[in-house]
Image (cartoon, rainbow, N blue to C red):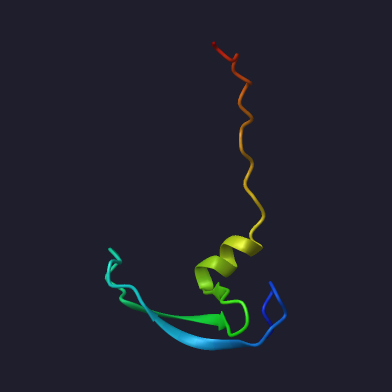
Length: 64
C-alpha cells in the first residue's frame, strides 16, 4: 500500500490506546514508514465520505 501523503511504503501496525472509553484497547492501522501518516478505518471513512450539508451562519458584527 502506498501512503496518500508522500507515496511511501505503508506497514500494517497494531496500536494500543489505553485511554479509550469504548473498551477496545488495540486497533490495526496502516503507518507510513517514511512520514508517519496513520490510516485506520475511521480516518479512511471520514476522508472518503462526502461532507454533509451544513447551514451557513450569518456573519456577526464585530464589537469593539
